[in-house]
Image (cartoon, rainbow, N blue to C red; front, side):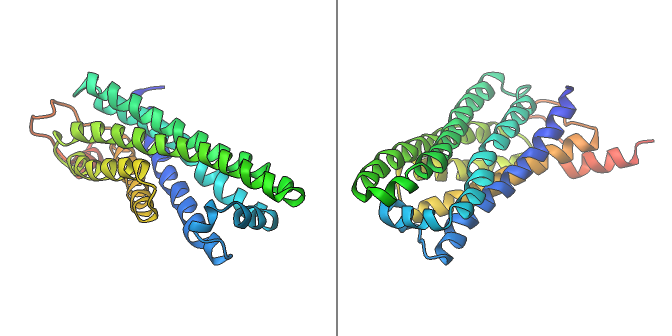
Length: 248
């Protein structure tokens, strides 16, 4: 696979990751509360397990595309973005990629445990409510620990990647500034179990996935990846696309 194809693939999967993450946020913050399971109640064993017994299909449709698929798509975006930035700061790019991969793994494992670990307790709750509640706290606590790891890891990775893009002109420079904000929000979300911080970090991460993916895809689709040093004058993506359209 050529670099252009990898970046085009990464850009497309970044946009899809943003859509999948948006679906997950819509599910846990709007759809499930509209079915009488608020955000706070999702950490209550009896409320959640009773709800899951009645709406297992709804939970699966929210968790599988949003909670598990979105991180996997985000991983492809990170690989393509690292390939794009490696020419400017190879060492820092590798550090940012490694931290981002740790975060992606944390999110994927946490979502997997919530979907299948908590799902396995639904029938147990019917026959033994006390035992199921104790198991719920253990399983949910483990899942939340991985999700916190995901927030801190991805946040640090985005911070490092953003610091590299800040030195670039054009659209990547703007994404670099937004990456700093998104990275800080993700770290706070991982360290602070506050629902408002979680919602803000989720919205910013959705925008970061989609915006970064769109930048990679447009640049690769134009057939003219930007070259040069990070501090040298650079054309922005719109200029590259226009030159590519005028080429014979």
